[in-house]
Image 1: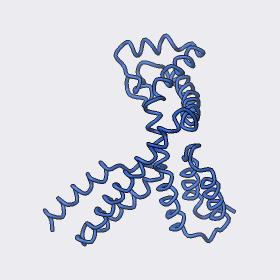
Image 2: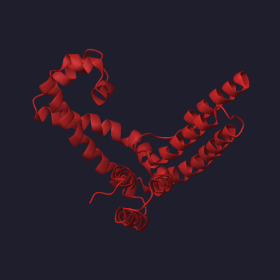
Image 3: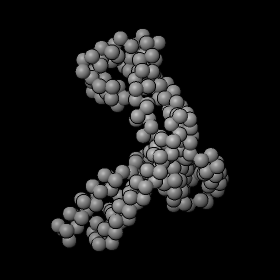
Length: 228
């Protein structure tokens, strides 16, 4: 019998799966055990699963951000080089380089922009997507290994930096939540945004940033002052 909240449970499992390899192994195992415990109990309320998504996401977030930081510094060049290698195997390297030579960006390949859609046929796009997936898996594995090896010191430094940034973001979220108490009209909407930001720690459906929270604080402060 399927769990009545199987979709939310899948989000919780995915949030734990997003933890990098250098996330503490014992905590990863404990989180997976908690997921299995919740999944085995069909009476588990959805609010408890949602609470776990936020709690686990918050704990994993500094590690995810540290991984992304190392990936930005080390992974982009590798991705571009490996993508050319994969496309050469598929007889697509020359056309790919012609695409870039026309002034297109590598980001157009990553994001599937309009130029990408126009320049390549549907079959060619399918080959490129296949190559991108292979490259992504390869680079992700290498970055994980770097964080466990030669870049371990840098990775640990970034984890501590993002833990501090997380405290700062949480302070902003708390300030934003306080605005809900000032407005009967806008309170429910603000609380919904606060919930969205808290869920963003998991990175499953969206992420949370200082800029995003600050933007909402500025907007709703203005709205409350103008209309109440």
